[in-house]
Length: 146
Image 1 (cartoon, rainbow, N blue to C red):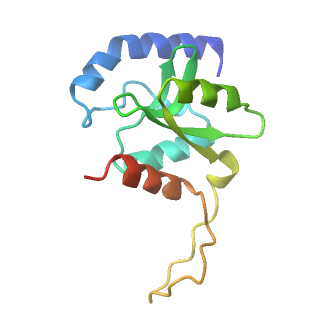
Image 2: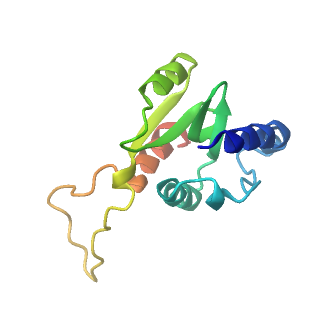
């Protein structure tokens, strides 16, 4: 992420976060055009998050770090990590701050979906582990089930 993007996001959240939190968890996260800020993999995960109705905000700044998708109330985040991105130090820093982070490797974002069939065939074993839907399902079960 470019320094001007970081500056823009910090100012954006400084002004918009109080309103977002006032309507939590039913806030409107479209405070900017996320397609221009998120990477292709992050945008695909963002679409999955919106389909799952999870109250995660994209690129939330926490001190000097950014969480790709985060819930500032429950301190839960999803990080999309690629080969060129080192997140271990950030993850440790955020863990110390009380955040629970889930890592999704970027190469898994575009895994092919299992083929649709007219009849239900129970799978012998799970072939598609750690897709965005898997990770978001785990986040939903652990943090948003009633």
